[in-house]
View 1: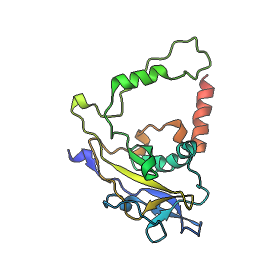
View 2: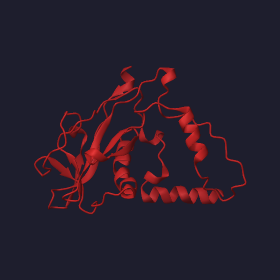
View 3: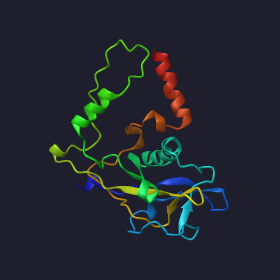
View 4: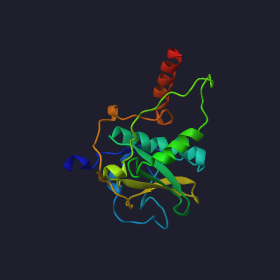
Length: 206
């Protein structure tokens, strides 16, 4: 049980020095999580950490391609994986451990069958995928993980921010803490140089 209840170490990202000073500094944002605090009514340097000014967009594509990878990679380095969902009524991305939801075999099968196959020769049958799900299985008595935090959008200032203190939970439960080298990473979240290396290896085998 103790091995499956743990708190990550430092979760470091680059932020702006302040709202008006875009010199970047490092921030370990783990101490901001788990304070039962709501979003600040008036975000400012007194209560928020601002992401750099060039991250000044909030579209679905920008969130997935630019904002998500910042936090996905940080958590991957810390030994766990997360996913993010936009919460419209809170103007935030809610990030949770990938083991926060139970695996649903029927939903997963229907999703896989409905996906368009992006392959050179569509006449070839798809390869069998026997990979075990990374999500907990309710029928096996596995526990969902409660780790979560939020990254907010300020529409007035067109900036993303982390409150100095926010809701959420820093502790993980129901799964082990891994070295980052043992965790798989989706190609879309890889740093550009690593993604190019993966693409080169795939091309060399084709």
